[in-house]
Length: 343
Image (tube, rainbow, N blue to C red; front, side, top):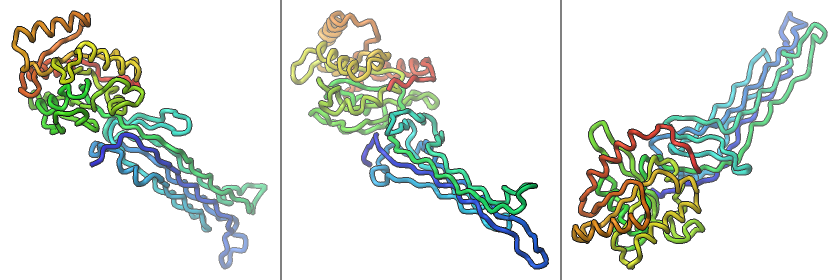
C-alpha cells in the first residue's frame, strides 16, 4: 500500500430541512388551525481515528464529503427526519487543520477518538410553532440553515515510542529488522527507505514499544533536499530519538561532521525536535577490532563533548542490540505519558 501522510479534503455538512406551513383540514373540523411541523437537522461530519488504517492514501481518490440534508417538515405536525451524521475514518495520529486559516482543529492520538469538523444546519420552524393567543392562524415558517463547509488539511504523524534518525546507510533499517518483525528494504546504497517504517520491539509478553524508521537525512534536508525532511514530523511524537552513526562511512566522511549535519537539519526543521531526548548509537562495530573500536568511539564522544547515553552495536550481527532494547524499554516506561506536540 502506498504511504501518504498528507491530504486535503472538503467537508460539507447537511442543511436543515425547511419548516412547513400547513393547516388542519378535516371533515367536521372547520377551524383546525396550523399544523405544520418542523424540518429535520442536517447531518454533521466527524473524523474518527481507526487503528486499522495507517495511511491517508484513500483521500487521494475521494476528496469531497457531504453529509445528508434534513428532510422538510409536513402537515399534521409531522417533523422532518434529521440527516444522518457522516463518520470518516482516518489513521490514529492524524492532525486536522483548517486549510484556509491553518488553525489546528483537533489531534486524533487515541483509537476511536472523534472530532466534529463541521456542524449540520439547524432545522426550519413550522407554522405550528408560531401560533399564539394573538396570532391564531400564522402562515409563516422558516427555512433550514445551511450546513458548515470547510477545507481541511490532514497530516499524519506516526505514533511511536522511539524514532531512528541518521544519514543514509547508517544502518537504521538494519536495526529495525534486527530488533522487530518489520522487514524494511535493506541495500548497499542510499535512500533504500522511501517512507516511514514501524516495528514493535517485544521485550517480554507484556512489555513492548514501537520504533519508527524514517528516510535518511542529508545536508540541505530542511530546504527539501533528499527525503528525510518530508518525514521528520513523524519523530515529533516519539519519546526519545536514536541517532545512528556509521563508524566507517563508505564515502570516508568524518563521523563527527556527520553527526553535526543531522543535528543542524533537526534545528532548521524544528528547534524543539533538536532538543528532544537523543541517544547516540554507533553502528557497524563488527568492522573494527575491539581496541580500535573503543578508541574511535571515545575520540568521537570527546570531540562532541557528548554527555548523553552512548551505545555501540552491530545491527547486521545483532551485537549489543539486546542491551540497547532493554534500556530503551526502561526509558519508555519511565517517560511521561503525555507527549507534547512540537509540530
